[in-house]
Image (cartoon, rainbow, N blue to C red; front, side, top):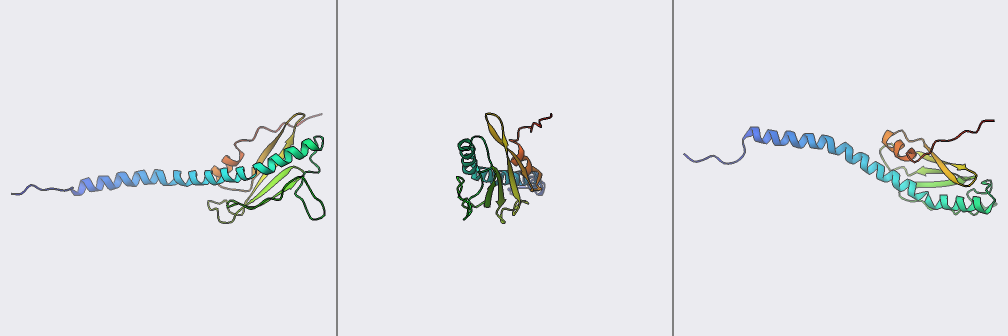
Length: 154
């Protein structure tokens, strides 16, 4: 008799089961990873606008009223935003930044908005992020840098 070589059916089934379990864990994690990378690119696209708003506020004595997206009638210190792969458009209104996401981002991100509300302090400024995105992981990635808003009471 010749010795049998190769895999038995049970061994093959065990390998397939292990590969299936690994895929069931890895595929959703990869989806979240790519979505967080897209959100990171969205937030990075706003950096030049944030810098321009900070400079505008400083040049206007701590007031953000003049810090808006320029129009044909009203020039501004805020630059015109050039669309990126992730951000279709952006506008600035009195320091508040609104980003409209590109339609083909997937993961419930396409066409949604990210709002960055300017928070002026006595010697600093920051932004409070909010969004219309419904994907929980994306929303967490957008708002994780928020510092608690302090409401002044009289």
